[in-house]
Amino acid sequence: MRGLWFSLLFLVCSGAFELAPQASAALPASQVQVSQRHVILCGGPALRKWEDLRVERDQHDRWWANFIRASTIRIDEIRRAYGENAKVSWIVYRPGYAARGREDGKPYTKWITQQAAKRGVKLVWISSGNGAISAINKHQSGSVVTFDFFGHSNKHCFLLDYSAIIMAASKAWVHEKDLGRISRRIFASNAQCQSWGCHTGESMSAYWRQATGQPMLGARGKTDYEPVGLGEMPSVSGKWVR
Image 1 (cartoon, rainbow, N blue to C red):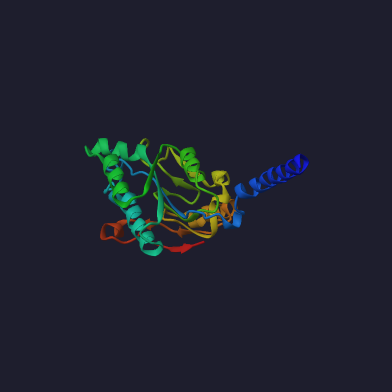
Image 2 (cartoon, rainbow, N blue to C red; image 1 turned 30 degrees about the vertical axis):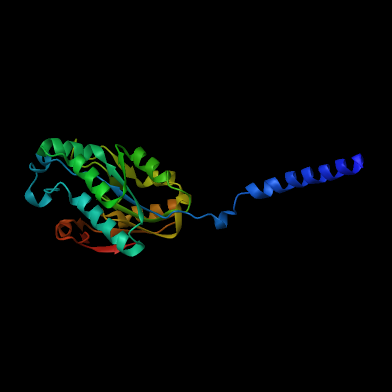
């Protein structure tokens, strides 16, 4: 009888140890719910002390909020398309808005923080191109379904800073040759990516596709931010290309 009880006890304990791993096993990757994210990268404005030295047709950023307003218009578009609870990461180059705020005597960084809170988006302040790439790469694998850039640019760079420290020059950027440092794993399949800066469709879009595996719509020609004052997205003097 004692031997029988020992055998039964051994079987019960063995069964418990066999069942435990199954109860705690992780779900297959295909069954894990990925939280969708919309990423907006926003560069800073030029300072008027530099731009006022240029002829009027070549001046930039008479209004400090060109890229900020374009971002909030895009956030509202995303919410209409993906739902009111769509998660947005708003990555903003802080030094440009702090400098322009000091020049204009306005609390621009505070206002931007208030806009982010009002719209329920995650505001991420950055101060360099490396910081921008790091902030982008922190997103979950397969989560980024849209990416937008608002700011100054040329065909080779996102210019996070432009004409704020040096007239008509940049001290902070993301170059097309830096794009290989962006993790392609963060993007969902068929993610929608667009640069709203000047000329990026002429070279940078091709580097973006090579680096991330996603096409990026960019401008062939200059972009115009005047429409954002009317609640519309920037226009292009040439055409949008991938």
